[in-house]
Image (spheres, rainbow, N blue to C red):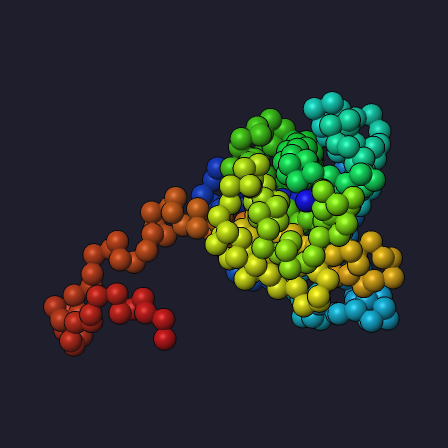
Length: 361
């Protein structure tokens, strides 16, 4: 099989707490502020309207509301609740350098949309940066690939790997540039600064170790290699080794066992007879010819799906940082590491059974 047109979106998320100066007091203050809505207020106050030549942050709440109105008029689904918009609408970075950093163009002089020669018929669609209300940065980098003679499965896998690397290279460049700036020191609480250490010299490996990533791939469909490009039936695609290879970016996809492909088929959640939706740990694959029809609401739905991925990645980054903070500080270790309290000796009645206080009602 060969793949027709495809659009790739790579999403990264990293918690700003990872950029804090190594100070227990600052980390503890951040956790306390995050427990209330106060941190969101401080974050908005510090970043909105503060351009500094690096772009300006604005609340995306009104943009999400306008998007939902447009979707409703077009007959699509309104995915977001008013509660989500009011509480979790992120900040969006405007007027930033919208460019892709590649090995061929490590510091491109312009925002050229044409991708380097190793991407056949590829077009860069842009990159967006958002800041979640708890202080997690999310970046979404997108590109389209539209070769008339379609793409081999191995070529699709190679493109996915190369574009993810270039997208991360672009994200690294942004973090070094934006958070290496002395003006981005973090919001203040009663005059106390949540200081961010300069990230000007952060390395690829350092940022990679703290970043969560997910890829969204939308494919127009598949054609037969041996029969002059005839369309492959959906039922065959959904349990094919080719789909499994794209989902996992596995160049050895032809060696996949049939029972594994059947398991992927069981994960398929698309409702229409002409589309496929499969989600795995690091990749979501959508197969739908309707996306390239400008009148179809699936274009709006893809944007909502991308925003959902961003939101979930920010949750993962937030929880990961909280677990790391808890493990690194002895006073926050689980209660079972402490000496048990002898209630009988203290004359408080019958001793409690081990860990009873830790049980969830």
